Image (cartoon, rainbow, N blue to C red; front, top):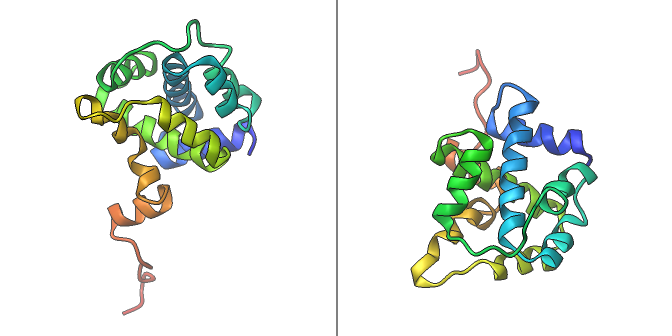
Length: 155
């Protein structure tokens, strides 16, 4: 998948009116995630992504391996994206699901292992809700009722 396909997929899944907003969601999510995980893990995760997307996890990050919780993650994504926190959280889940579909499972597992899942900060699991539901298409179907829709004009 190239940059335009990646961005277009995020734009479609988030139902955004333009690609600029999709890029902001991608950049906000991946820069914040890149700040949270160690540099070598960010590089592993980014290796299978388009060059422009890879940059957000690696080159655009000033300091890797910072310690912050789920709430701080969402606040940072929200600020960078200029979106409300609930929207930023949803956007981050969509971006992470697409990343999951593009990277080796071992690299994605490393990402999950980097984020705490203790009782004190179980909210990190929220980042993977779409992935854990089977991916965007499965989660989207469950949310919209799924199944084939009747054709218009047929009874």
